[in-house]
Image (tube, rainbow, N blue to C red):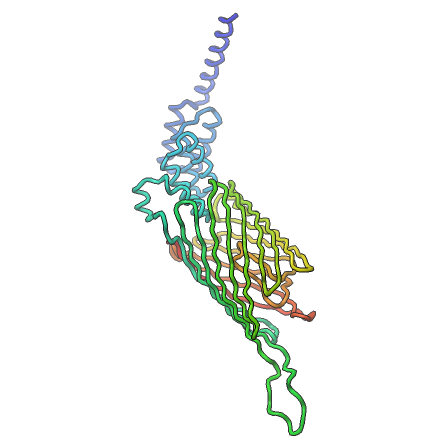
Length: 402
């Protein structure tokens, strides 16, 4: 009986080997053909053939590396990360895999997660890329001009300056200072009739609004997919003769998967002596495995004293030409005191916002410098009235990566 089992086992093994040989997927055949396709830069064919070889039982490191590199060259960076991760399961210190994961993360705008790969890179690569343990990784400036079709609301000017740092391989810091000013007008009720007539006086009385802000956010990589974020945003607000010291705290948890990411966060804020609690759920998609097409959807629940509100924000972007991206955004639902982008932007205007939408373009001037131009239209309700008006905003910015 034992001898019969052995005969059956070796017969099945022989049949399996014969089947593989007949299909042409022996180790030698797969290694030779995949290398030939690699040398010919036939990236799409290499991915197709390599995956078929894997399905037929041929799985070795060089094949995985060739498939991953082909996916990288096809700009499917998410697929490349998946393939390189499979290489690392058998060879956790493979410098080639770590290097291309680092590049892929950068091209997917996942710069914080990219930092986890640095410690595995060779000394030559670290020197060539100019990577330091502690470094400035970016800087930028942004300015915007806003005007409305309502005479009671003067023009608005906003500027911010921001910088990014990396501490070690897993902690990043974003900082920003910003300045905002606007003049708000009310009817001049001090004008009284009389004889002789009083000297001419303006029909409107202006109140100056000035705001100064400081923002600091820390992002820590927990694993290759999980991150925790915490931020503090201080706002000094001067409205006429009144001043307010506003503070906002933010905490969030983010998971970056393949072709998508998820984030849940909470913000707690005092804005003009009013407490605000906000909770966000965000879904990001990059279905092509790169930034040629992307989507960010954010659902927000916000609570203020005796009031709660729901908002939905949708961002959709695509690459329309080499080095040029176009991005549209829309925010649905009424809001006061809305916080966006991990608490970086605070919409605390005196007038309720009924609708916000806009269009932006990003132009890569050099590999390390990007120009941003944008237009935003907002429909607002004049405070203490039912009068609606439109506000237009033009924004420009420059950002640098170091």
